[in-house]
Image 1 (cartoon, one colour):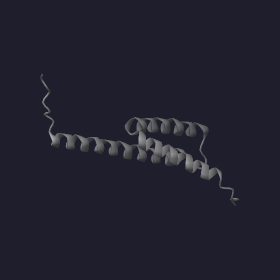
Image 2: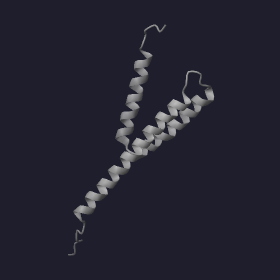
Image 3: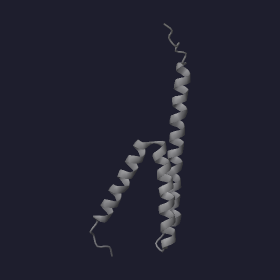
Length: 96
């Protein structure tokens, strides 16, 4: 009976793991910075419906890229967005 020889190098595995985590981190931080810049440029006190729709489309694209990179981080980001929206809607203080 023949068996396959295991020729995997442990350094190559460690290096490939490092590269994968490095690229995931780079992509996630890039997406976060792009989303923050989208919000600061498109959502202003006198924003129009066009800019709101542009922000939604841009955010959807960025979050879908994040979902394809790392599902765990995507789930936590969407949970945080939901929490922030819910807490903002529950703020019943009178402003002014």
